Length: 639
Image 1 (cartoon, rainbow, N blue to C red):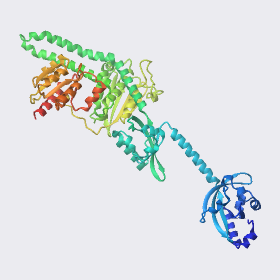
Image 2 (cartoon, rainbow, N blue to C red):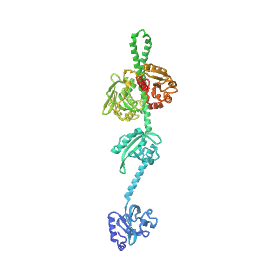
Image 3 (spheres, one colour):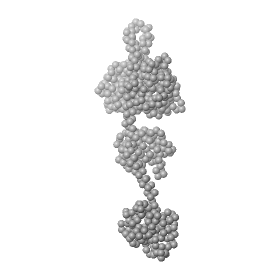
Image 4 (cartoon, rainbow, N blue to C red):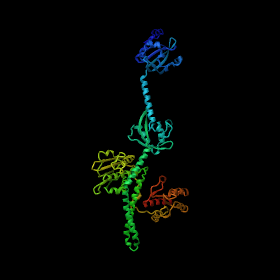
């Protein structure tokens, strides 16, 4: 459609501009040609597509001029502004107002040309509504995403490999950085506990290389710049940004949750001890009774031995019985102390058979009243774990088995314990001949606070805590049962790659080998313990006693000892205080100290002793272990 065809013909461009008009119509482009040396510019040409887009006829556009059609904010502020366009052409976006009053965004390409020595504009434009709508939707989406991410209660991070690219405010607070910008480019491993760095890097690498998303969240210890240590649960997926594969990670602070879980586990442990208290008393009183009876017999009969030497063998039998009873009491106390102390941090190779025997020792009386214990152990490798926590699991399973037989009869009811090894895993099954678990509730027994026991008897936390402990050991726990035919709980754990260390103390009847005779100082505020130790050791060493750390320090200022056997908990100056004093007054002698403890140590003492290489013996201890330690120290000193 030509507005001034005759004028274009006179200017010598009629045929050319007509060709442009036809091409623009076919290409769905608006075409306008104007002289720009007047204000408003004079429109010479408008094609049909442009007329349809604007809703005006060509004559109406000629009468109105372009400034009436452009949205006011796009009209040049000064008439001569349009002359400053780049001659090579300009691309921009604008908004036109149609005859119906609708605002339509357009993309414009504007070039300048010369017509009859006059400067003119030729403009191509198209409807940009769809693109504007898409851009608006994208901006809204990005804004919503930004609001969601920035307001998220969990940390959100984008990682380029192990390098930080983006953090939301929550993630920045967790890492102790002011904002995302200050963390960009830093390595995420700077904020991970050194022991967890390798696992973190491997998981990121696997995500980037394989794209495989782990079903379970990872758990790491993080350290913020201000020194705060958190336990964080990380879920991550691979994403692409600008053609590069990255990791989108969601971090949840579970520090408080882990603390609550530990407290619940402690509560459940104490509940179990409460249930066992009567049985434990029975277990201790029985051997204690025959220890005392044998000692009373020996006290009465020993004075007569001078006139009746043939009775020596009979008296030695009484001595062996007393020793056996004392060892039985020591075993029960040791197992109870280990169970109650619950050191969760120590991990290492654990023989599940030892763990099971410790659990049976603690619960022995409770179990024996209701069922016969049947052991079916095969040779198995160790598992990597914490023996205290695993003992808690199996003690709970054994108690549950006993409670499943409230009217159990040991003559025909039994609790069978099986230990097997296959395909790199060790499994333990605890099977009872009780009433079984009803089908209606078997799927709920691992739910927290679900219990079929009367109020005050069960907390509903035992099995959930068992599952939590086994999961933390990368294992599984499951149950099979049918009503009236008992239940079988199965625990599967990965076998350890580290073999168990041999324990010389387990070798029954090991001969006492004689080493070099040394000078030993025994320090204990319990004179009876110190005196008995001297009786045990004086056949091999010269032993001197001190009943306080201060007295020991005074003796050491005059005599050099090959070894010092010292109690940890003493009034006034403790064994740890003595260690510090010896390190200052007699450097090097502190390495020859052997510590003893008769009970649970306070956390500070545990922490201190854990850093030392000095032996720590828990009373009552196997004297062979003490002899071996002394022999090593004396030999080293003599060399």
